[in-house]
Length: 358
Ligand code: SF4
Image (tube, rainbow, N blue to C red):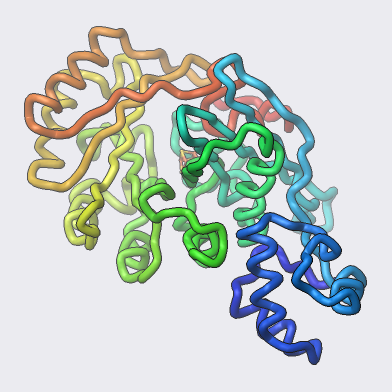
């Protein structure tokens, strides 16, 4: 069986190459070719001797995720549905086809690629269609970094100089910590994909042990917290994970988080009409974040299959104004690709035919 190389670190590739009886530095050359040069055929790795590339063709593989479906939005973004290998169900039942989503969003001078870290998700946020799938399985480091590579390859002709990556697709990245961080290290490695830490953002629903672990990493992305509520009662109702990691404990973890000089924490707040968009909620959010080096992204809810309604334009502006008046940096973000199912998980749900819960 051939060895899958996608997702391996430079160290792992060096060790693997040495285990073949080849010089370890050949592993570093393959690493550079895959991630920095985006060459996925051994024959295209011009720095390898012909005999070695022939051997690698026989004994190794670099398997990018396959694109099953592509959805083009009028705003230029492209949403990919990527089938992964089949995951056997417990008890020998029929295998489930595992799919994940990746979104490529071009804008002036850069592209932003939104990737998934798990197929499905166990966190059960009530405003999220991925939650209706449950957790299918964790992705491997190769499947995570492969989404970035596949999106870049598919848009090769129109790439801007800068690439941003957001870990905000399907799944809770901090519940697939090791594979996610292995992929992030490749993204941020100057000898790998060479992205800047300030251009890679990991978004969490607030898994405190994961935040604490991330705080100790030498190489780490920016951190975003999906807040979406201003007190425990509100947050318990839409994010049951809050019962395990309530707001006060989450805010403590955020205050302890060691920010780099250029860094702010980002708090994501999906505005659900009539649920969490009142003036009192905005004032409570401002109090929670008082004195913290943070910014808030307000994301007005997109109408869809779930039983929520978008906030009114007045409610969005009122929320924004209250935070701004309390000196909390605040931005209103509209989801890209609304015409191609923008909300997290919508594609996977449509493709697998699972009905959204009422
Ligand atoms: S919003 Fe994120 S963490 Fe919550 S259920 Fe959806 S994918 Fe999971």
